Image 1: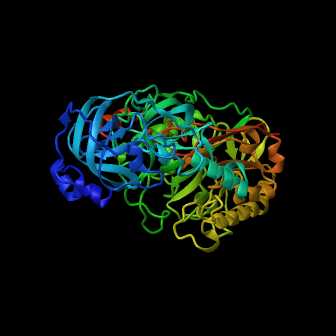
Image 2: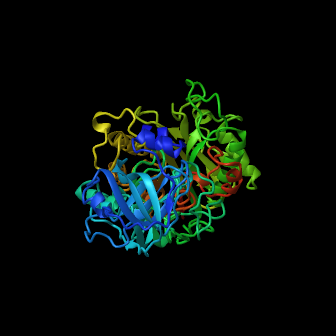
Image 3: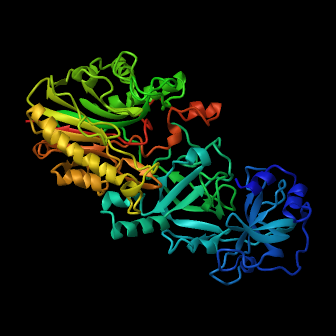
Length: 622
């Protein structure tokens, strides 16, 4: 909230008006004649980005959105000229900042006298007099379609009652829990350009189209962490049993098109359709993307999975960078109760994959002993019924300590000992390259029954975040984010590690490279691995695959690449859509939730255990 917003929140109408220099806010007169001279709302709005008329004005129109009341309400209402000024370039709606208690109702004809101007990019009238004239004329919502022609195309509808006649898809719900907002797009969810196209002009053109093909649907207030969260499926609030998944749809949404923020700079000023509180407002989301009931059929006699755990830490205090490293902040669960909630979901997710080997990312880097996070998760998996889960311990195999990384998190390998057997002497960590953030871990396995030897290398390359990125690692504006050069170097080192270390040690060329590469399919690090001969299994099965959503765009960062000799033994590869499609607020965390939401938004199931979807690969080994 701006300084001005903080000062005015919760104050009386008279004091607000005094602070704004607008005089006293009067109680509305009722059933007045309202026949005096007024200025058309369109003339106040003008055809540009700012108000064409500023200062004292009197306007008349019909209330199309009632958002009065104290903060975090918008503290005013939207007024629209039902006839309009005949100029298609100007908006016939405007926000009236009234700042007091309820004064009007949707459908009222209202006359307002006040001061016109801009506030956080939206034209508004700060009122001194509000007169209810009686019932207003009917206001028909104007149709607005996506994509729009330009970034300023929605200005002409600011403050008006609009309808989105298309079937639009949920393309982001990351801030649904915090701000009650959903991002929608036409023609399905938005695709990450560099997941489909090489960085360059064509990818940039798709990015431009994506930027014009999205709109927020927001609730009625600027409240943070609202309870209830109104946008679940079928018009019902969000809950663990009534989710809202990416790809779900809304058709014919009606609301007021506002240019507002969500009450915090984390969700800044943007065009938002507000159906709640609008005249005839509606936005009902349909379950167009059902939750999966099983896992994809990838075939094979051996199954391998890759899963990002989103920080599995058994400790909430006293964490270090490795067993003997310096102190660092803990991640994941904040306390024992959250750990139990997280663990229940993680066990449900991992066991549902029915995999024989699981490479995991974002495991706490706290060693491999009885009190370690990986030992804890393994014990919980066994307690859930399998009884045969184990994990690869590179420290024991190599006779060293903290070999995997000096980060707070590491990669790890879990496996079912009744189905596969680690080959003695083939546990490897790439210590020959110092540019990793989390060193790759390799292990060769054989089947416990039947033929087949194969090696799995699990990875977690440098993230795209821009902290401290300079030079070649800075964002080049091509869609690959920061640290791309570092990830390319890591991909090159990984190739050398497989060729010079894994294959000779295993005495077998069949290698599966898995993990969170923090690179979309057409970005340089993945292309580097493909250039070295690795086959991109997920892309081969589905060019439109996704495992992750960021800024409303969907692609996959979680990869499975096979060496040439293994590629012909792959029977299938697919993302398991249990995480990325689900709202983040359905995870195990308890902070920023009411007591009721701590219960209603949580279930000990496999959904939303992470922000990444697992990848499942089937192998028929020879």
